[in-house]
Image 1 (cartoon, rainbow, N blue to C red):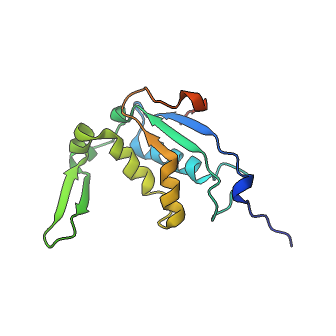
Image 2 (tube, rainbow, N blue to C red; image 1 turned 90 degrees about the vertical axis):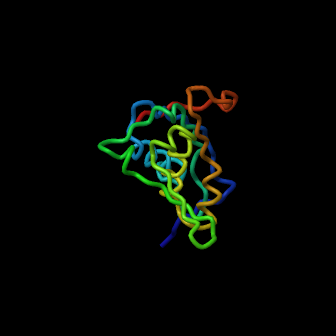
Length: 142
């Protein structure tokens, strides 16, 4: 039985742009993680970066359903005793709306060194302008 395993030099990376305006956060994040991981390609190999580069625009206009703007809480810890900090989704949208999508997508990627390198393939912007026109990104609908 012959198996296939993609090599790093065999992968052709494209650039993709996703418009998050008026789209649910989870739908945008899962589509972006799917493309970053490379699962949409026939040469997908679990231990190789076969995915594309993803640009997400209009991150400030992403939607959450129900009461999640007030009830969804993000935690981080300073490392010191009693150093747990929390921020709601509404506060995060006011301060840094791009972090909402970054956290959602990074949570859907592998938790290993491949996942850490895949995180660099994501760019998130608050409005509809981005500096990656030279890469000629393709628009993807959700």
